[in-house]
Length: 303
Image 1: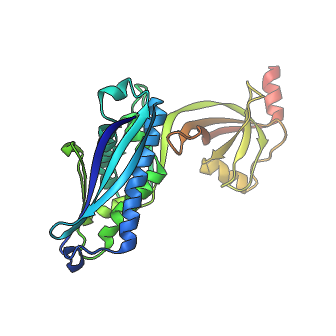
Image 2: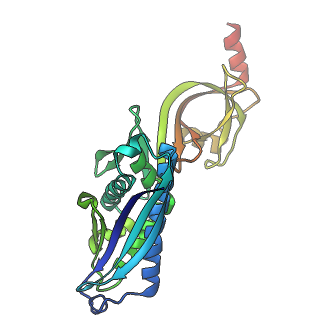
Image 3: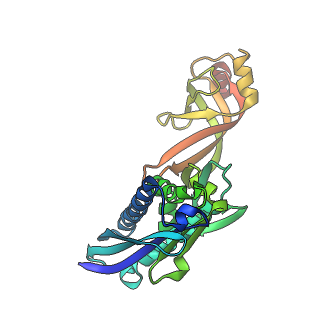
């Protein structure tokens, strides 16, 4: 069942002689068309995951040119069964184009020097990202699209023609939804071309306590394995960033034996590197208050 028939128009404009003659590198054209098709396809996949809806999209292409430009039109047929609930009240296409508009605007504002971006899940169920020192709220679809590595790579392919001399702007114009139109110029392109690492931070916290040393390392970049004194079955690997403690270990001022304890402060994070990926928990020891030898530990227990 076809429930939507919409389109997105892609325009490359500029003052160059080639673009004025409606000419553009064939590979850039092919990559751009493929990129937009991929963005739509991946966005529908995210919609399916979020809303558990049986839907898909088929993309067709038409092309043409205007004065000083080259453009093509992607016609998008939304298809699916049992499309209901929230999706029956608001167009899937509208949701996707609004989310893409917001994601690209966010990416344009992030400095090219910033290579790691953290999306934080809030208790209310939405998400936030820091942009220019301000917290920007994202809904579930926006967060999913922003954290989708394949969509970000396709956005880069769309923008890449702006590296060519004489091609100055890219316009992405969804049918029916003028507020979702996107315009990108040469000055904004670099922030969209940079490959960044995105993480979704689900939860984090800090604890203090005493932990047995299961395995240790004299290489400061390697991880240690520690076991909570009160939960001896729950060992895990940690990174240690306490430079004073690490320097003492490297200088052999710390002598370790089986069942030694570390009294420490630990910071933990639950993260995903993709929105629908597996949750990974990382542990970082920020401060080692004390290295307690097994003999000292036994004496304390006897008192």
